[in-house]
Length: 195
Image (cartoon, rainbow, N blue to C red; front, top):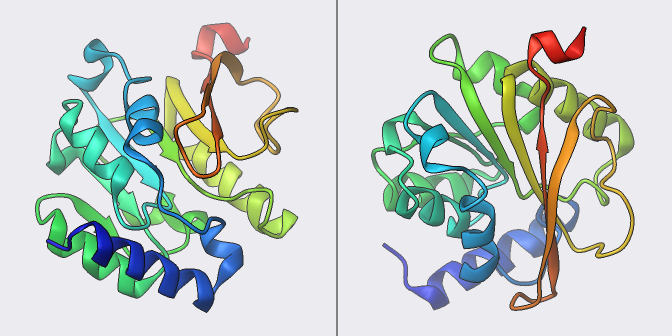
C-alpha cells in the first residue's frame, strides 16, 4: 500500500496527464472524505450496493470502508488506469472499475439496489455533454430513495447538473481541505414521491 507521499505523487502525475479529469492539486483530505462517508446512515449501509465516482488515490474509498461499507458491495470507478491499478492493489476486495463514469450502469451489472453514489468528479471542469451523460447514468443506477453525495470547490451557488427532482438534504463546508470544499447530499425520490 503506498504511503501518503506515494499517493500524492500518483495524484500529481495524473493531474499533469489530464487536469480536467483530476480537478485538484491535492488528494481529498480525510476530513472531506469522512464528511462524505458519514452522510450514509448506518441503516442504509446494511443493505444494497454503493458506487464511488472518481476515486483517485482512494481517500473516500478508505473512509467508506471505515464507515462500514462492505468492500464486496462497493464499486469504485476510476478512469485513470494508473490510479485504478493503485486502488486495486490497495483495496483488493473492492470492485475497482477502470472506466468513465458515463459507463457505470453497464459495468456494475444487475444486483442489489445502489443505495448511494458518492462522487468526487469535477463536474465544473468537465465538458457539459459528458457531465450530462454521467448524471444520466448516475440517475439510472441509483435506487429510488438513494443518496447522491457530491463535493465541489465552489462554496457558493448550486451544484450543476443535479436532476431537478432530486431533493437536497444538506450541505456542509469542509474548511480542513486544500482548497476548502462543500459537500452536498441529495436524495432521489421514491417512486410514490415522484408521482
